[in-house]
Amino acid sequence: MAEFKKPLVAAPELFAARQADQDPVARAEAGARVAHLLVRGARDASDQATTERVLALADEHGLDLLAELWADAPGDSLAGALWRLYVLRTWVRRDAVQAAREFDAGKAHAPVDEVVAGVVDPPGPQEVVALADAVVRGVVTNDLADTLDRAAAFARIVGVGRAALGEDDHGQAISASRLVDTAAALESAARNERRGNLV
Image (cartoon, rainbow, N blue to C red; front, side, top):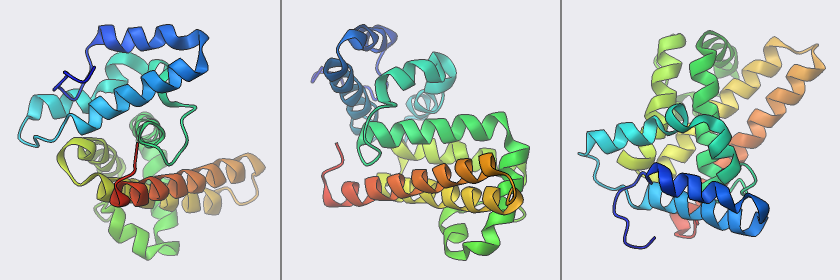
């Protein structure tokens, strides 16, 4: 695997990683390898085609495949951070109106996070989709730690907004709490990246 230079592994490598299903350790190692190749192999921000392939990974291969690779990875690992980024992006693209509504409800409670997230004001559906796409592109084109912090800020604001909008709904409260946990995991991954030990 060391000889790969492209940031996006070809389909055979992704599907080979699926074969590790019977062995959780092998699956975790395969997922970590794919995450490493995806992020660490991609540092030419001028390669637009590669960046777009990274962005469309979940669209082309499905979240189920990514879940098999990354869903069980620790939140402060590279694979765990990628899993959270792709899940966040997929949700935002599927329900951009709700994402914008929750972001708008939460931004007053987290003004610093609003600045870090960088969503245009007022935050409409197109703006939150643009942010979600920019965050996933950022694993290739930008500083990874900053990208993770930006995603964390977005997740926290949406979580706070979800809690505010569904304050009497127990299910919404649990979901909001999970978003805040996601934000904390992404922040931890960003700290690990800055220390040089995000693997």
